Amino acid sequence: MMNSITPHTEIEDAYISHGDEAKLFEGRMQLEDEAYARTRRLRNRAQRQAKLNALRRIKRRNRIIKLSLFWTGAIALAAFVVIWNADAIISALNHALRIV
Image (spheres, rainbow, N blue to C red):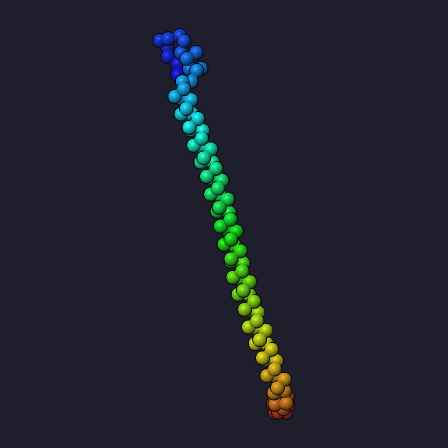
């Protein structure tokens, strides 16, 4: 800080007192701690998001598997019913076509 009263203030400003130096060091350490904490929070958030995304993929895959098993079973059951009753279905179709 410049003071017009004393001509040696520039020289005095060049030297930092021990107390100011300690405060600057403490401030730098606090900034480094905050930077480390921020990177740790970002890393933890990324890990948490990756875990949530993995759980969502697993749930979606399980839902797709259940749905595909249901429809495969439904189609297989329908095919079995059609094959089991093929004679009745064919006779009903012949009867319907004779009427037309």
